[in-house]
Length: 126
Image (cartoon, helix red, strand yellow):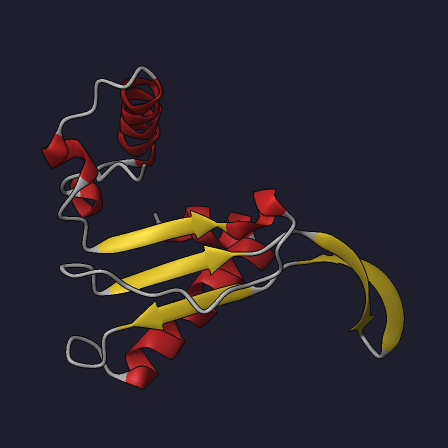
């Protein structure tokens, strides 16, 4: 079950959190309406809870994109020219080219990656 949050772009972070919690409770109770479960335009999927690094997701009309987040793992990573252990995840983005150009989609994915790497910077943008 994937609940749809209406007008998410107009909600504050607190309002978005409250709506996610409300919809999650409604779905778990089995009381979600078809409107609450359909007609989404963008899906955020957490593959990581299933121990998966990534996926090539299929978007379902009327969706235009789906962002997947893989599991977070300790991996060797080069930081300032030195090898270090860092928490790393894989982000995947599937999108409809009829709605969005690849450059725009790549820019969005870079924004999400940057926000994940530096959440304080994201807060400054809000």
